[in-house]
Image: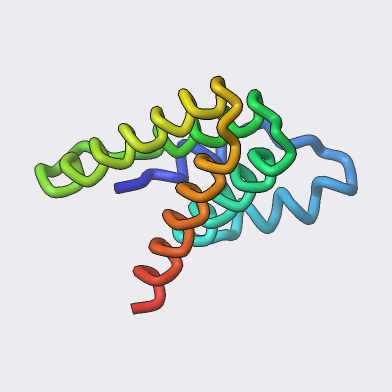
Amino acid sequence: MYNFSAAIKLNNINNNRANAYLANEILDASPEKLLIKVYDFAIAQCKNRNLEKTNKALSTLIGALRFDTEESAEISTGLQRLYEFCQDQMREQKYDIVERILSELKETWISAFST
């Protein structure tokens, strides 16, 4: 359902020492770990009430969805609706709702990856 190799790994990464570790960690991460990192970032920014960064993370999640098979398209469509709902809720400053949805989705993915 997700294609993180294109969606995340091609983001601009600064070349300074502070970001070198993070850059290597991201470039070496599996798609599953990248997905969880995006959720962690979105949740943290939601807690900080940062509309722009939360919506950027949500846009990254939307952009990584896959619609290439009937099964993935069905699941991706539902996730896209949830992410767009979260973006709308952020604009309305309903941070608790967004944080709860993203946290529950993250835990669901972690559970799915461990089976």
